[in-house]
Length: 339
Length: 166
Length: 103
Image (cartoon, each protein chain N blue to C red):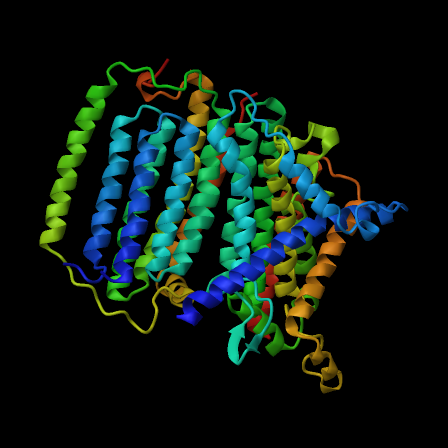
């Protein structure tokens, strides 16, 4: 009874809380990192060094007036931000945060569950997130959001193909679709897949940037281009939900990249006994550290690179990343059979 | 009433309710949203039937691909009138309803009279990805390759059909 | 009366979903809704196939269901392309108005 119902509920509670708090502090982190890259300080007023800024942001968004455009489809207008946020959150059900540990004498795996088809579940659930963007643009009953949402969804479904190709080549290397199994395969083969398949790593990261609408692929939400993109007509808490969805997607892509390419919760060089002192750091701390590195690189790229034009963006997705992905699948399959 | 039966009735009720909403809703975008919910409910049903792989493929292809295509087409096709101008809609609905009820009644009678008892659950889960992959790549390799050519042909055909003539 | 979920339950569900799809095809005039009802029919068939795969402990049913999903994707793409081409020429999606072979 405890193992079947209470334990998963507790894990879900912990993970959801961690993700939602992490997402609100990501807002602050982004502003700070971009500020430091631009030789200024960012938010400094609220709390020490601006650490309580997210609380001020959340309070502001909660008390803002809730405007719904006239003749907008009210039901769809309200549901669109939820449809954008829910897939980003339920992916965390298969992310393995750490190995099996003993808590109060009970063996607990630090993952909510381990599906046999975990990686496929991640891909399929993130493909539902497209609906939030399409419906937000449609339900706003206004030209700019509709155009922006069509562009954004076309971008998302194009880069989904490239990312799925990369995931297929990772499955070929690991021999299993389950996320915990992929970490185990990296342990058995003694190499993180970032080094065994560098091209896949780079293509996955670029695809992840495009999938989450982050710079340099953030044409759909660029303020200078389409007056705010698909969330132009949204205000208050619904707008906050879109932002939460974007940052949650970033965290999802970082967690999946950590699991696939950087060995998840494994310590560096687990097979080398001279470095076994690194085992004092628990697995979930390694996982969170590696995820944080990815998130920092996301923000770093945003502060540095200019934005791609829409046709350049689509050209990269279809003519560069997909052929590279297919070539990667073929080469990794051939090498897997030969070696 | 075992928990399996309760789960089946709950998911089945979701499927039937959303399907009814799809065919009776007046607004096309609402119909498409109900269709997505229906496909997600069917994927849930597959998950309870020990077929996780087909369930995730159902979400990925049907809910995440085909219905997005429908949504794009609905947005590109500007409808002048949302409500259907009717010549005599109720007669069509009544005749359709009678036909459907007759065939459904016959199917239910046939099904209940030839009821099959459920098999014991097997140890070697057939829904695992490995079993499906083995069957797909050894016994059914030729249909697999043919389907890939079919998809290529469909892709080329759809692009040519939807291309704007200049 | 019924303790376990038997294939009969799944067949009943599949029959109901099938007939709802047929009702949609017969009754509605909007061609996109007709296409969506055809997708409902294909889903009903898939439920049947997976139920029998569960009953006889054989993965062939699931392979068949995968092929049905792939063919449905191809059919949806081509069908929607035809609808777009038709709409560009006739400016309507009401099938009652698509009743001449040449215009």
